[in-house]
Amino acid sequence: MGIEIERKYLVNPTLWQLTKPLAVATPIRQGYLSLNPERTVRIRIKNNNAYLTIKGKNEGIKRIEFEYPIPLEEGLDLLPLCEGAIIEKTRYTIAIEGLTWEIDEFEGENLGLIVAEVELQAEHESIRLPVWIKQEVSLDPRYYNANLVQCPFKNWK
Image (cartoon, rainbow, N blue to C red; front, side):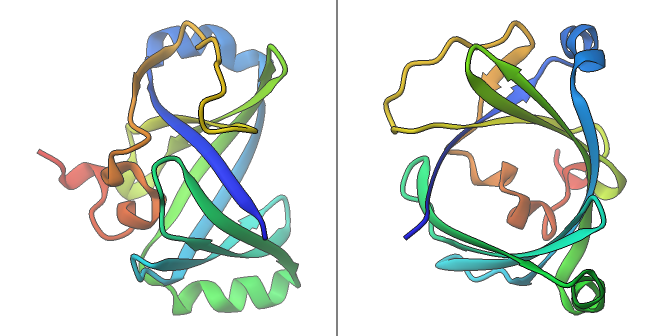
């Protein structure tokens, strides 16, 4: 069984701009075939590749996750079947002190939101946060991508 242990943070945009040139940028489009809180089923298009991902319900910062490559044409055909909006973002990847940080700059309905994620080996793994981290939001469901398709950042008060 695949287990994902992930912490999520808001990013200070001004400080992030200093590190951003060192990161690798990848455009991503993704949608959800199922937004059931017990499990989500996601289609993601990234680097001309498509993936089907199934994630279980969050238990703190841990949940089950299975991801499978699928043919790009099938991924593109599945996107219009997704519930809610399609998420568009640019993901910046950077290695810092042995960890891979993924910083998502959202576009479209979620423009202005910048979130950093880091996958860990253990739930209580100690990490040093980069200077551009502003606030942890790991347990705030508003920042889950599956929720952003239903309640986009632009509609928050």
